[in-house]
Length: 498
Image 1 (cartoon, rainbow, N blue to C red):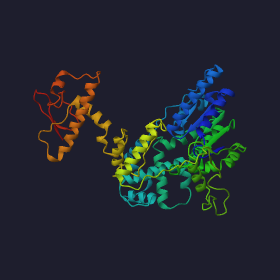
Image 2: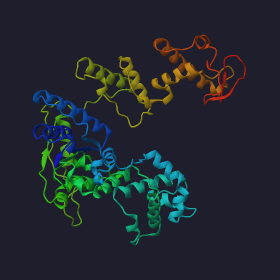
Image 3: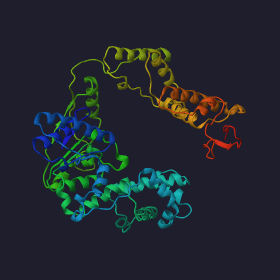
């Protein structure tokens, strides 16, 4: 059990542990389960492992292949478990798993909504009853009711909830109907992202040999695990009893998704229960990322006597692990710098000057390492800051600061489409449509510039001659979505705006 604060090198420790097992202890990569919770973290693990094993190959003159290693997000590896012969009885090839994502799940529930309401016993007021019971807000919207029900279904799935067992116990009428609704949803025989984990756990439990597949199970961000994930990890590690978890209870983020920090805080007790032995605990307490003042502020805040982390009410234990984080940095440089109390334009110019100086003096190697954070990019304070940075010769990437169609990428893509497929006629545009046609012209100009610059583009001479006056070089019966009609003359096609 590795407890760690922010910036203490959790991911690096995981990577070195994995390299140590493969290089020094000759554990086969396919005998290691290395899991995390986001695609970004999984990508970092793969890239780091590739780099470290490449360096190890230079020293040992051996090649290390980890293509068959289980490394990635928990969801991706659950899906792989369901299709891997190693986890099937008599190593028979299992059938393909039809997995639906969040959007598919939403549309499935909407399509089956009337049937689900009927199975649950809800009447016409079902939408309003469901939203009020699950969210506390009264709404007769089918969308709101379906979204609330999906969230409820996912939570039950992540907690390994058995609707039949729950229905045998006493509960209020609305909850009973919701449980019957969940049971009807399960009867649809679909595998969503929450049920995927339960399906993988059930699949492993059906075959005792699955306990021996992995010699080592290593899990990052363990504070964000839910009940079904914890059950899966303990099952996979129960054969060789080598389970390593890394986490920081102060960074628990996914309570809304069924995660519970108790899985990490009470890991020692749960190891005794599931594996029959207590884990060895290692504390990572040195922060290598932040300045001394920031680390001190964090430590003083989190250890303040004003916070009581005990469970209270006569219960044993606490909701966090006591730890002391110290800074590797010993400097007393200010961690926060305040601008002068001046007018907004002056403050923006001062901040832009600081950014320019940080880059020119080499204190920041890549401008992308500098971020500006605002409560909302629709704020009227954003545009002055962007203009101040541009005045210093700095490009700004903030696609959400304005309208999507005004972004460079959108203008370029639509501009090329307009060059290739034509643009709507604007001769008789109404005053209210003028802004639209101004945007079309702007996009078209950018599209023409891209086509002229890219020598690989091939535009017919006919379309090139008529591009300024003729809006579509291709005359056929399939019109773009924004066209209301196509003229039937033999002249190049002219499209009218919808």
